[in-house]
Length: 255
Image 1 (tube, rainbow, N blue to C red):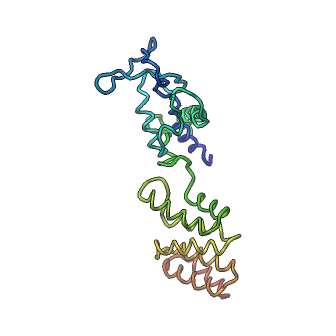
Image 2: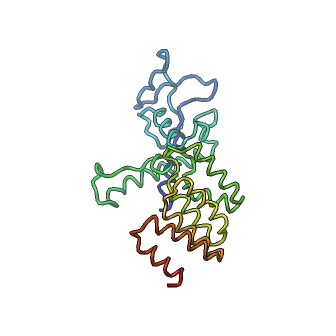
Image 3: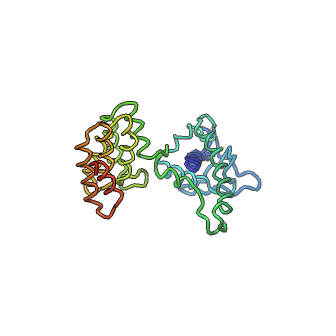
């Protein structure tokens, strides 16, 4: 289920699939039989009827749904659409249809899965997974991938760029755990890179016992026992009630 729900969001955005604008130069079309008349636009002019709707309801306004999807993914209409909004030229729009169906299927199954009534169940939507970004990966996943392909310098710069753009939003988790996770994932193969991220984390969270514990593990990987003991002592001092840390420290000191 790793990103099954996330896929959902992608799909929704692409839901823009069913666009409401006709090709450039085309005349306005009346609503098909049984379909609600399109809402009036500015100046009382009637908006074109949606064309090529395959998943979204034909009797409800399309624009509000598209706006919500775009906002949830932090994108614009062009992410899924070409100039002719009804065309199916972009892969993202085609994927969106399938994701909309997936969202529908998940929401139908959720009440049974969580043993609640439909009214008590929280439905899945674009924001559930995307939270303002088109590709809903975690901050740790993004940074580890960049470090692996480009190195720690580029990965740390990417962290600063993302922090500047998204801090305060729901898009990425800038709490102490994100960089601790990055450090833990890099420790086995790239302990120096792990230490770079963990040291950065101490700038934001100087009282983070978990960060210093992770630093100790990275130092051990580098066979620097003295530095590892020093970091673990700091971790234990910050979390004196954690008996697990105390036992690790005693073992490290050979007691």
